[in-house]
Image (cartoon, rainbow, N blue to C red; front, side, top):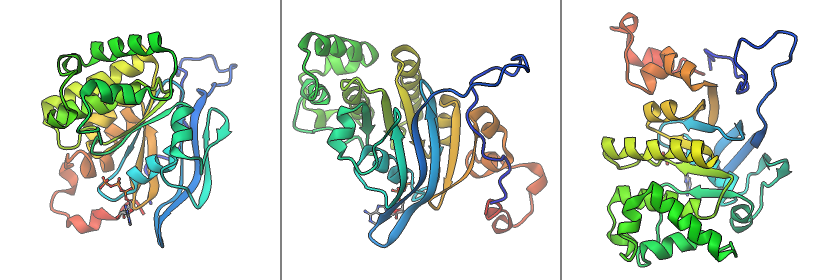
Length: 281
Ligand code: ATP
């Protein structure tokens, strides 16, 4: 692509740092390097590399079918990559079972929520804590998730299948929290929700990051929300990362504004759209 921003690493220090001190990079909790993952003969992601620094929210933007879900499935062990490495807290985890990955601190909130519809809300939450032994700590965490999602306390005894879409999304996030993850993988939490609910859920995601210290890798088609929530972003097209930068800079990028935020620049008015479509490759 004609990469309008050269790929760079996330920065943690303010620009006013004295020149004599080297700028320190934030510790990378998750590193994905040159990963290729296939569905049978179809290569869904090709040479994907990204970093998620500890304590940050990092987003991957991309259209339908770009490969966002495949990245998350590769990190959480649902899919094995054919090539490349996935390193979490310094250890290579590619090819591990999803159960092993979950027990070692990565919680995956899948696209479409996938709550257990015939279990109650409380039972769903306790399923999130299945690998934990300390009952008092689990009870404390139930109180903690009820604090963030009071509706789940109110609906505690109700079957999850009867919750609205937004409430099921809250339950899916809360269930993942019950595992006390250090990294949460969020697959399109905005999908199918009203703008008000999307705002509410992204507000809670930000609070969980700030108050509970959960690092997040968020994949989204709702570029506006994702870029306002995350600190660093990657843009995925047809399985490849084509751009990455601080979210503030991505929000100002002409290509992002036109193709992901729907903001048309005056200067391109009148140009045939197909002429500008392939500018990134
Ligand atoms: P969406 O937003 O629609 O979920 P995505 O960016 O998450 O899209 P993926 O679901 O990762 O994209 O899909 C990446 C590519 O892999 C697409 O071309 C898709 O058609 C293909 N793909 C996904 N799932 C399968 C499958 N089970 N079998 C074959 N191909 C698949």
